[in-house]
Image (tube, rainbow, N blue to C red):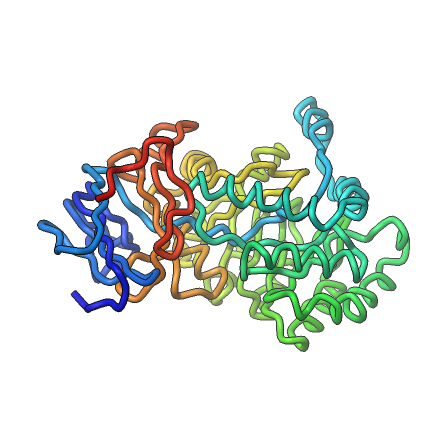
Length: 402
């Protein structure tokens, strides 16, 4: 075991340790049985099996499972207001459309910075209770240079993974003038937002922005030094996936309606196909067929897409259940997609895996293995969430630590 500068903690007697490193254990998830893990200074120092080494502190897993913290690569946490009535109407048969975003825009513009930060922090902490240790947060509910910039500043208080989404929907004041609004997004809005963002995104969809408009936004963002992401092929077939691959986007998100050319393009590229199954659940849209992409060799991720309109949840375990049942993924594939897959979608190699040198982001389950996250749907099975070696959340009766 490599010596560490600070105090070391071992988690011992782990029933199943999911490392996501095939060189460390069995299968693509690198599983170890009867395992231990040592962390110090916020990173993983060593993993192994059998008798654990002596350290400064010990956590007794008592046969429970440990896996990497969930990496949620798509969320919209900075908003104000409520769209519960819209959800109820949709459950009663009203079709989903992108237009409801404008309702949230009005409420967000009217909210104070403190109100936006309090709401986003509450959701970020709620996600930690479900095992999420890294979360990407987009703007997109301000849609003016000042409101988009402050949304990103709020997001930056909670995560380093911030995304400028000025091209979310055309605001009311630009009704019928979408190209003029895109010019503003690529000009003064981008100038105000780029210092506070790591990524740029656009909503490539009928009712939002077409391929040419999205291309203009993404290319302007890249020129400003931002990485590229894209909402693609959510509500129907379209050019989004092909555009994402052409521009080298880190991820194409939703990927609900794909033809064979889309599948081939994703499989032959570094663009991650990110599925957001809680959105399809909430909007009564068809679920993507993840099996097609996986069998073709594409890299996939799972994300929650927490937002007030189409996916008002922060629970990655809920998304795991949907992915296995309705997207036709195996449990191992779903767990990998929610951890290492999300890390890949964020172009991160320090998270999503539990191996020496990686950040100590992990979940201790109140169950023997990740199988139970799907096997026991709706049950709170996260006993401990650790972010960079520090407890981000613990159940009322946390595991014994000595």
